[in-house]
Image (cartoon, rainbow, N blue to C red; front, side):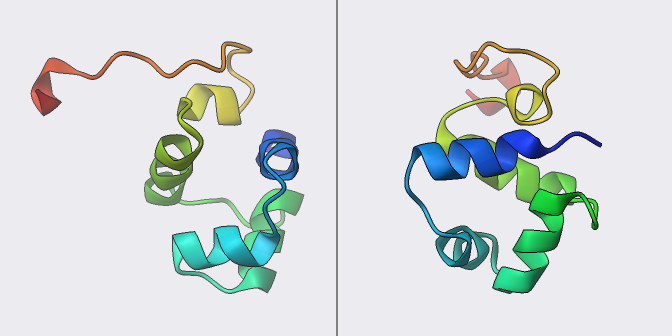
Length: 77
């Protein structure tokens, strides 16, 4: 899985791996393995990151180059 964007977006915001690991409630080495693609990042962690970075999971996973998040689902209104 191509998850290079996790590192790119984190570095664009000048955040450390430790800050993002704390956000996700994982260790810094665990988060590093997500960025490297050694471990698959769980969907619930991707949701947290997409919300935190104000983008979509598709953007984080290179399924789109559109950084803007999708409009909310009617299920969450």
